[in-house]
Length: 199
Image (cartoon, rainbow, N blue to C red; front, side, top):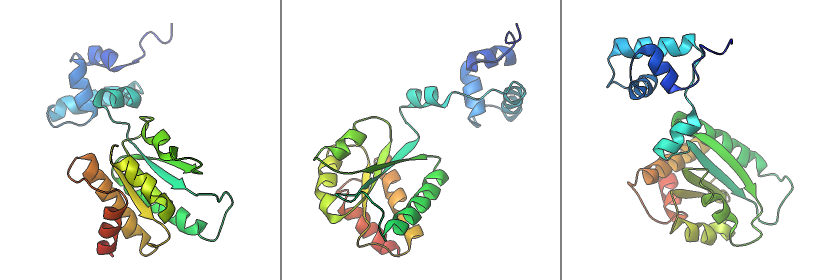
């Protein structure tokens, strides 16, 4: 059978390398706890056998998704409008800032037809945090969810259109401080303060 020597998981790679699965896991994560020579040997074996760790399994183990939701609640509007370029520019800057932090962006464009539109995303377990791009009519719903939920920040796209790269960086920095448990508070008001001070 052609697949007989195939490395399917960390345990297979550990047997091949003559080390424990934990050592392989740390070596593939480039942990300094593993001697450089051992790390390089295990990483080389992984490349030779075209092995990549299962990211979903890792995320389950560490209880993180590696994704941040960016919510775009658009009220009653479903068609494009002039401000769409601002949203698209902001999405690009948020994607860059999240990529720099090693996270993926999960985009959700919603029409808030009831008061649970944000609960559906935050309760899904698909993301580590939420950035809501919202108008003033959604800030109450955002604050309500923020009072009981994982890290969440909001950007009022109608009032804060200056220096989008700085706004995106300030929002992502605040979100990651909240993920780390370093900062808490209102989701809607504090990001605006942080963003205004950054420009």
